Amino acid sequence: MNCRIRSAVIIMFVLVFILPVARAYADLIDPATLQIGNPPTGGDPNLISSAFGIYQNSNSPANALYNPLLLIIGIPNVDASSVIGGSFPLPGISVNNGGTGQLGGADVYGGNWNYGAGSPSGFGGDMTSGDEIYSFLGITGTDHSNSFTNWSGADKTLGIDPTEFATFVFELTDTNINLYPNKQVVDVTLSGIKPGTLAVAYGQDATHLYDTPFTQAGMINKVPEPSSIFLLGSGVLGLALLFCYRRRELV
Image 1 (cartoon, helix red, strand yellow):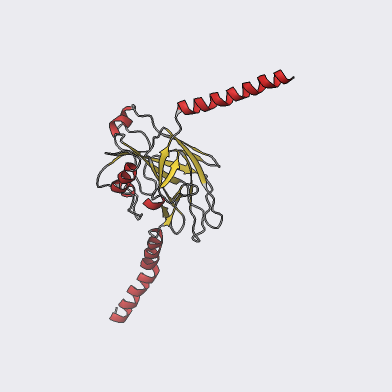
Image 2 (cartoon, helix red, strand yellow):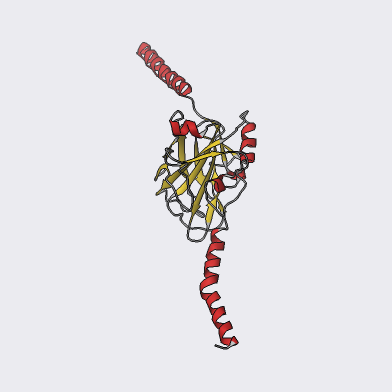
């Protein structure tokens, strides 16, 4: 085989096999933003409650996301031993506009969030100084701004000084999230968390990955307390009884 033929074969090989793979890989490491909060507050991160939305609000791409859509949270000052030992109850989730959510398993989108022997499904371990949430969980090609430094700095504005974040991954399925121009929102409610919990998301479609930069992450600044809910319910009941009593007097 002479030099020209050899060169032509090499060029054809690159065009047919190498470039398509490289192009697909490049597309998948071109992130689009999944925002946390509905609407976002622009707080860097967005201040949210335990009920919030996940959505993407840009002109492109316009594809439906694959199952599952991942919601990743970090709960401040909860260590691995308390999670594995069961003294800290596992967080829960409900999806309020279709679909289901549960604590995830392992090896979804290349991630691995089974912390070790005896750890519950969906637990990713304790993120500490020097870590960044996506890399910590083994998800590559993402934004790297969700560092322990940024998360702990945000928590300090709430008067919380974290030494670690217990990380959990929820897998949301059948959410039918179809992005721009429909701008559908996945509304979720978390339980078993506390103020200072940070939330980001991750998903993929045929050409892109979707992640959440720190500026569009969510930080939970208020969680309804059982006593507050009880007092609210008691107040409503009291008003109802008073209304019935006064109506009876008038009759």
